Image (cartoon, rainbow, N blue to C red; front, top):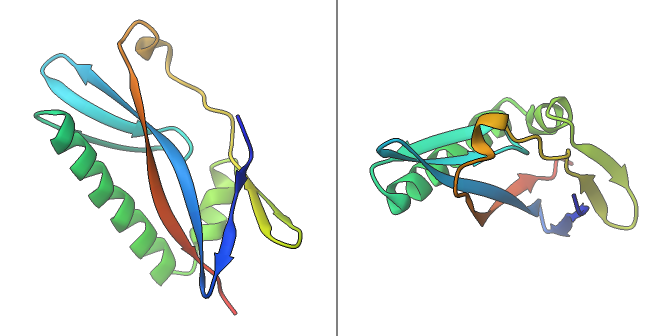
Length: 116
């Protein structure tokens, strides 16, 4: 897994993560191994839109509680302080049940707030 560079912009850091998109029987599923977040929908667009909502709720709730950084560390992310912050994403571990499925990957971006 490549290192994910986080760049500070005012009071937030933008992060890109991979989201896997696949069909499970009649339902489309979006799954982000780096965040362990799932969503589903009747078609690909529904699943992507639902994932955006799940991601927004995750960021909103952990930001309110000021626990986002702790949650990322629990998920295996590593934070290093350099001239810019660098978060090393955890290695993707994909469930063996998914190996035989046709999987597409797309990117999602989210902002990590920088606390003063």
